[in-house]
Length: 315
Length: 249
Ligand SMILES: Cc1cc2nc3c(=O)[nH]c(=O)nc-3n(C[C@H](O)[C@H](O)[C@H](O)COP(=O)(O)OP(=O)(O)OC[C@H]3O[C@@H](n4cnc5c(N)ncnc54)[C@H](O)[C@@H]3O)c2cc1C
Image 1 (cartoon, rainbow over the protein chains, first blue to last red):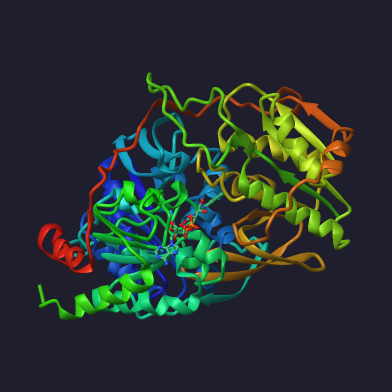
Image 2: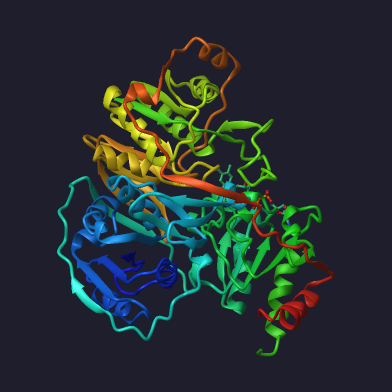
């Protein structure tokens, strides 16, 4: 039996997290098909066809799917699912939204945010904000799974030559209408795709102080993140939040500035390769996970960091 | 309009949990239990609707062991009107919870059901979406703002790139995100008053829902531990270590 992967994309580009989902699918065994549901998303379908190891790409190109709203998207996926042993999507805010709807319509218990695959029916997933790892076995005929991209290497974006088929839209359930989006604009890399992230917490005191972090980010080509406290206080928009209930990231380098290291924050970043903490409180729990800790006032240390990075010869 | 809110009893978010030595699960003995923080936000939102005159009754439902009564009492002390406990000692999956809630929705006929977006114990983030599916209703998940209209509601959602607004048909499901509101604390007089508010008890059998497990937990383990690293003297040392030892810049 084959596996269906639902592509993450923005109608123009296939997002790299989809490549992690393809790797997860390959660990389940069987052919891998990708569904691209979008509007004006032909280029995404072509990109998906080039992904190594993919057998077939289904493209449902219709205004109904332009924003991947859950109700119509679930109605598209549900009739396809019985052809597959498993349906996989990335555990981002799109996947988290529509996949449980698919699972319930199929009468299946979803397995959320898996970080590893033991066998075709057995999966590892974090619980309690990542403070425990559960190994669960599913007895459902179709597995409905969301994956944590940080748990799976990316499949190669090149080398495949899958057939592309177009798929007719399913009906509009008439429950939901897209009104609009307010997307944070940034020249910087996306948090979940960045190699380096620098995040600010409550210690930043105000959104007006974030430029010192941004200046370091510019030196490192880094994305900027934040703790919940910084988001709740309005320093930065909600999509900056890293943690149990925000984004889960695992960059090469994560720099936590003025962040205490609450378990809910650690849940989102403790799989980073190298962690740096800058905090004036030497007792702050963030130092227990940091590879390199600097006990200092951030308002002094962060501008200094920018200066030192400027002086650094190219690697 | 009647609003149904779901409240789950979970390990308090401040507790550092311990995995049992025999790897069968997490040690819950003598651990402080509280209402799931996202559900507090759900209760608060329903109460604000009642105070604004858009809701006339707020019913809190919890599903699980007898002690979930306490979680319902907390919701009643915050201001909910009455409670429903679906009592079971079985370990339930979100699919089962959604089916039980659907049966209650069929009886109660609320105009809106508000749930937390995820429970901080199993971190599943499924129940609200599943309930919406089973009812054939719209779902406004990860909500940071709800504006009730006539026959529909506008829901602003926290998404990866920012915020998204949808117009959703009522009756509908909402799941709460952190920025929807700041929940109130129950005052002492309200805690006293809550003791007299009614809680109706049901069982999965009463509701005709099969709760046979689909998933079995084979083991629960500690996550890989990170070793604490070194404290550097100054920024120059930090940069040199990142360049020469870690090789990440
Ligand atoms: C249901 C729920 C979900 C949650 N989800 C998340 C989540 O996804 N992500 C998340 O991050 N949190 C989450 N939290 C919140 C979490 O519990 C913490 O409250 C939050 O992470 C704290 O943020 P902080 O470290 O920025 O603030 P604080 O804990 O207040 O820490 C601020 C730090 O800054 C340091 N500091 C202050 N001034 C300076 C200075 N001048 N120089 C250097 N250091 C300074 C202080 O020493 C302190 O350590 C959640 C909580 C709940 C209940």
